[in-house]
Length: 79
Picture: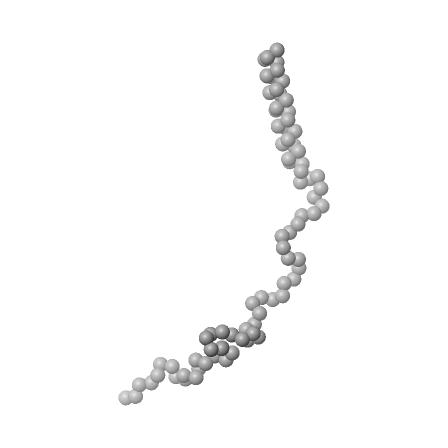
């Protein structure tokens, strides 16, 4: 009985385009992704105006009234 090689065609291991050492020459592989379309980088919000500051202004006004109340209360106690 003759033993057959588990690899039926030893030339099948030769992959075209593969350089010695395992490198691949430029142009042998397809690009990783398609071309990028549209703007790159973070999204910038524009045109929101005063609306983005409204919650901060409301909180600042409430804090100012609370501080004025306590200052008035302390001044009333001391006098």
